[in-house]
Length: 480
Image (cartoon, rainbow, N blue to C red):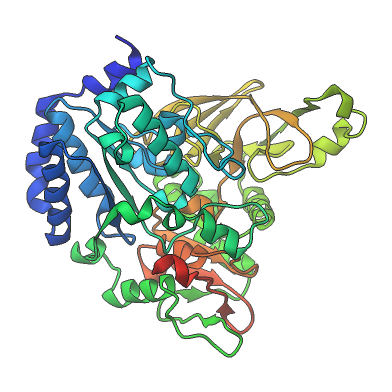
């Protein structure tokens, strides 16, 4: 029996059912309604697609993990395939959708994609035998991704019903960021959104509305929760410039970038060895260039010695090598790959840019540098179920997309993570959050995602323009 099949059939049933017994009574009314509906379909072996509309803090991950444990505890296959690597680390046995379902990378230029899963393979067997598939952060996935999975499941399972008769539970929040379309317009993003798919009309929508952070007596107030939803829904009042005015009631406004970094990373020379201190804070920025600038500035304050790693870049087409010399390739800085000149220090937070060993090491996982060697980097996982585990990061070849030519960069798939982009922060939860809005948000849901990473208004620090105003871009068509 292959590793793929064993992975799904070797869960400890007693342990999982005990997990369910302890957590079932903790489900609130909204969660219970969804829980009962999923189990009703599961017990009757009825196919169907449910979408859980769940703003941040409403206990979506908690509910999905209870359902996963319930079904696996009865020795049936339930798959957890979130869109993002961060969400995969939060779900029991989670793997990213691209990894498990072999969804094509290029979904923009293929109107009829199918997944790269061969009939008779171990993955095909798992999908044929699965009872329920849970897919979190679905709002980030291009609609062609879900359509590709639908075609593939129909083929593998020999069933022309929706999703081949498999129960599929989608989850997410359309107030958050949508699929990334390089150089795309608003119309392009809306067209790529799942709600524009022909499959959406067959999806049953169920909602989670109770903010569990408030219910659990966290410092978040109900007013802050309501304020975030107004931002997410595009209902917060705007000025004559079409911007929203930031209020000291819901955040601490910083006058300068230096002040912001000092608020988020105070006394960094004393605290840099405190893993818990590092894991609960980050500065979020809309644009990659500003991320690079802030990371360099904060790392300069770290008292440990720096080590520099240079990538090896080359054109994949020999005929293009004369047109694109190595020096030019070195100067390129695509957002999806590491820098040519990567400068790191022991103790600094870093972010992984590729799936190396999901769900342990996923694209978006945050780590701490433990040791810097010539050909390997030792690191400690910062968050998630594998927190505190030591890992080794190798150099790997990376090929960026979206360029008029193809080139390969051999480098450690890492970037510093004192600051990260708002899009990369989706799915993360922080106790201390910095938000640099001097470069304003440029796409749907970015402001909502940035502000909703914070657990507490007293530790949400924001810098914006002199008028303390910023853009809040919301596509109302997506929220209908």
